[in-house]
Length: 360
Image (cartoon, rainbow, N blue to C red; front, side, top):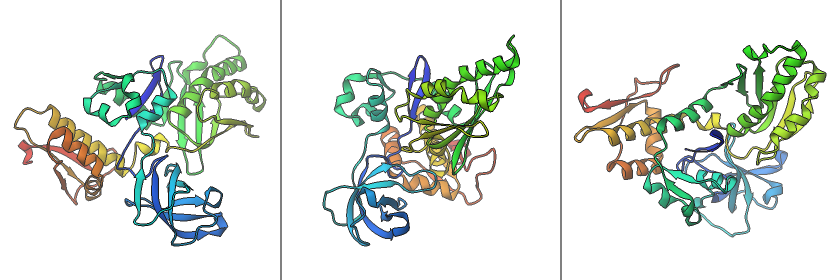
């Protein structure tokens, strides 16, 4: 996990999972599986159990035939239940399916966005995994786990409580993301109602833009301001455009709908944080991280293991990169016991940590 902050507030976040499938900038040898004339493109089979990627005709797929081996690179990471978006390179290729190169990692991406920032690492081994060009910016600093956890726990919640008493609710759907602004107790200024609502919404625009960037929301985004007539909402256009201007993906305010909803279009590139931080793979890595912390902090002679649902146990085993890192940090492979009776349920997880005292 990595995040960049400005003035003590998180601004950009990213999670790197080497065992998590295709990422932007990765280069693969793939094989064209199915041509789709109606979609002006084709599906390309990728290695390592990844879902097929989509290669548009406009990105080099026009002359490719089913069965052709292709060298492709990922231009958009898998997200929203869809596979990676691909572009073809001129490098000739043949089988088997394989990954040729990885794109920039999470730290590299954030370092490029913030060229003056110091890079803090909490383990010496991390420095060795970064490009040599970043080494002079590194500093060993044990960033408190609570600080990191606080940032990412906030991103898991759709609710954003603001110091003013207002609240934002971020609701992703397959087609778009809705952001609702609730004035809450923030509208009690000694001003007429209309003036107070206009002032409040203007103050919240920078935070709305920050949450869009921090959560890496993409595609269509609709913002529902608190109160205000449709005319007053449209008057926020210039201020909202200014608030979005600092975003490196250059989101565009398309205008306000007849219902007074601000329509924003932000490019889809990396998966949004609500997808990254949830799901089976995220749950399996949370379990593995808990096991790692238990081993690293336990007294000598202690033993720990994870009892997990078969699905989570299988995901841990399949992520060879995470298992290798665990072994390098702990000195042994993780012990994961699959229990068919254990299933994730609301307000619970599909795993638990056990110690020697519990028969580990």
